[in-house]
Structures are given as C-alpha cells and as structure tokens.
Length: 390
Ligand code: TGC
Ligand code: FAD
Image 1 (cartoon, rainbow, N blue to C red):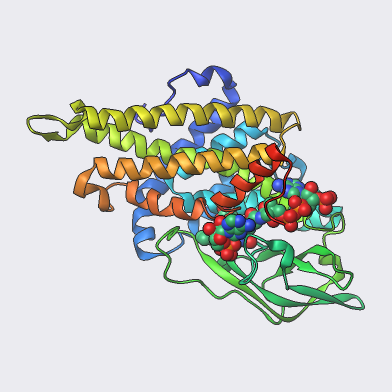
Image 2 (tube, rainbow, N blue to C red):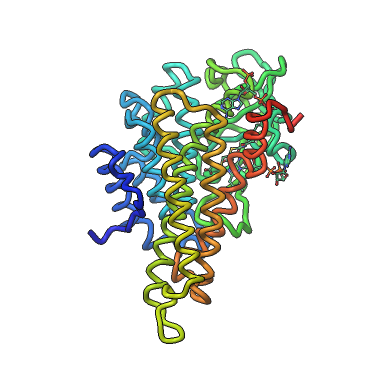
C-alpha cells in the first residue's frame, strides 16, 4: 500500500489482533487523506482545523474505550493506543484534541458522572457534535494542582464558580468544560460548565511556537452560576483529575511514538535519496548511527507501550508505570525529532517536511500532562518510597 511505513523491527504486529490492525489502518488512512495534506498550512497560520472534530467523531477516535451504549467504541486499550499513535503521526495537536475529548472529558463524565450526565453529554461528545475541554491547570498552579484556587460556593440549587484556568487545549472552541474546583469543605470537585453560562469566557492563547494547529485558551469564571446537577457526583479529591490524566498519559505514550515514527520514516527516506560527496548521505556512518539509534529506541518503546496496554486491559497498570511510559516516549520522540531534523540539513527547518513541526509540538507534549521532571519524580518516589514533592 502507499500508506505510511510503520517501523516494526521486532514483528510486533504478531502481538496485535486483526481488529487492532484494521483500526490502525483506518486511522492511518484518515490521517494520510485528511490531516497530512492540510496540517502544515494550519500550523503555519496557527489555526485549528475545526472540521477534524466531526471527522474524528465519525471515525470513532473519541472515547474508544467508553461503552457503546454511550456512543463510545467499546474497544480495548491497545486499539486506543494505536489510534493515538496514528493521529500523532499526523500532528500532536490532532492527537491532543482526541486525548482531551476522550480521556479528559468523556472519561470523567463516564466514570464519575450519573446516568443523566452520561446520556446528556457522552453521545454528542463521541460523535464530535460537541467539543470538550479539561480545566485543571491554573496560572499559579501547574505541576501542583493540589494548590488550585478556582472554587465553588453553595447557593441553593446551584453553585457559584470563580477562578481561572490556563493552557487549556480545545478551550476556544469547546461547548463543554470539565472543570476542577475546590468547594467550601476544601474538597476538589468536578463540574461541567457549558458555553453560554453567564460569566464564563474562553480567551485564546496566542503566540505559541508549539501545537500551533491546536487551539489553546484560558477558562475564566466570574461568578458563574452552575446548576448542582452539573457536579460530577462520584468523585472527590485530586484523584478525580489525576485518574483522567492516567488515561490521557497512556494515550500520549503511544502518540509520541507516532510522531517519532514519522520523523524516522522521513529521515530514512531522505538519507537514501540525498546525495552529497557523490553518495547518499545514508551511507555515512554518522547518519547510520542516528537512524540505528532511532529504530532501536522506537522498538524498545513500542514494546513498553504494548505491554502497558495489556496491563491496562487487565486493570493492572499502575499510575507509576503510565508515568514511566509517557516520559520515555516523550524523551525518545524529542531526541529523534531533533536528530531527524539535522539529517535533513536546511530542508529540515522548512514546512516541506513534517519534522520541525513535530519537534516543536513535542515540546508541549513533554510538558503537558505532567512535565518530564514530574514523571521522573513519580518514578523516583515509587522506587525509593521517598516523596521528593513534599
Ligand atoms: P497525591 O497525594 O500523590 O495524590 C492525590 C490522590 O490522587 C491519587 N493519584 C492518582 N490516581 C489516579 N491516577 C494517578 N495518576 C494518580 N496519582 C495520584 C492518589 O492515590 C491520591 O488518592 P487518595 O485517595 O489518597 O486521595 O497528590 P499530590 O498533590 O502529592 O500530587 C502529586 C503529583 C505531583 C504527582 C501530581 O500533582 C501531578 O501529577 N502533577 C502534574 C500535574 C499534571 O499532570 N497536570 C496536567 C494538566 S492536564 C493537561 O496537561 C492536559 S494536556 C492534554 C492534551 O492537550 O493532550
Ligand atoms: P510549572 O509547574 O511552573 O513548572 C515549571 C518548571 O518547574 C518545569 O520544568 C517543572 O518540571 C519544574 N518543577 C515544578 N515542580 C517541580 C518539582 N517539585 N521538582 C522539580 N522540578 C519541578 N492543562 C490543563 O489542565 N488542561 C489542558 O488541556 C492543558 N493543555 C495544555 C496545552 C499546552 C499546549 C500546554 C503547553 C499546556 C497544557 N496544559 C493543560 C498545562 C500543562 O499541564 C502544564 O503546563 C504543566 O502541567 C506544567 O505546569 P506549568 O506550566 O505551570 O509549569
């Protein structure tokens, strides 16, 4: 086929079912047809391609692990991982849109919501009719969300929401926001805020050099009256938002590999074609070292995320394992993108090739959903039993 090459050095396809491979092919074909031809242009213009929301909904990229009765895919975690891998092969911002919608908006409504909330929101989010966003980070509380200031106060049949969230993916276009706020009992609660509620605004964040094709914004709450029926009843405390992050970080562990694969494929093809000193640059040992290390790291990471997917399916994956995989994939993908970019020489800095865009995008991916440092400290705490945060 003329679809993208998929590095598979250790025949990992043998570990996938026919259904997994079909899902991967369909998302790969979608990316090839609808994303790759347009994405560079949108990124250059720093514009969000709004049409992808409905397209990804139709394809089943939103909430693939949510049960079918709510519009989800009823699929396993390997399927979800493969979808994220293929979307991020196109662009990390496209994968971001899907991560937020599925893991950070649909998952909490499914896992912590009641039946009315599930029925009201999930089918419209799954189909892409509505776009959602997730508000945890605040201007003064990023890595340490436990310190959040955004708050709700009881006012009879509703609560009054005040505060602000920052760096929120999808915010400028979202109809629905899952927002984490502190109540008067000092508990962190999830509330569903809808566009149009008085006092709620979503100013766009401009000037990003990364994830330019993804819309980022603030969420500002100025005495917003939120009906009590919009509070997620079944979770209290930071484990609510952190539980969502576990699902999204898992998807990113697969997704960042997609970006790495695209950089590797591009550099490999270029190295075989580009002639300097009368031979293809791929014949030089220095370039071979880069390519050999890329495929080695991709292969190791593929095994790690596949195993993590099996543990997720069995309900045995720990947040610490997810942190390690997210961190490792981001680490290798950023290194691969940088090396691949150098292999293309001057061409590597242009939009003719996807590498520079991936490289810049990955600076967000290595920062959001917990920074590289935070994930390292989670592993450090796990192996030593000593908490470096407190
Ligand atoms: P800590 O005391 O460790 O934990 C509080 C409670 O939460 C539980 N827990 C988890 N549960 C599920 N999954 C996880 N990953 C969990 N991690 C912790 C924990 O067991 C405890 O439960 P309980 O029952 O005892 O109350 O909390 P801490 O305040 O010490 O925080 C630790 C730390 C630093 C690891 C945490 O704050 C953290 O992960 N910080 C990073 C913040 C972060 O990742 N923000 C992401 C914002 S969202 C985003 O970036 C979206 S980008 C999406 C896109 O565009 O793709
Ligand atoms: P800070 O927490 O201020 O960290 C600054 C530096 O200090 C980092 O290097 C960090 O590693 C380091 N540091 C912090 N604490 C420690 C420590 N204890 N030990 C050692 N080093 C430490 N958030 C959402 O809620 N929803 C979203 O949809 C969302 N989308 C995003 C999209 C983009 C494009 C970006 C860039 C961010 C997004 N975020 C989102 C926010 C993201 O999760 C935060 O940026 C991230 O958690 C880090 O917080 P911060 O930016 O405040 O950095």
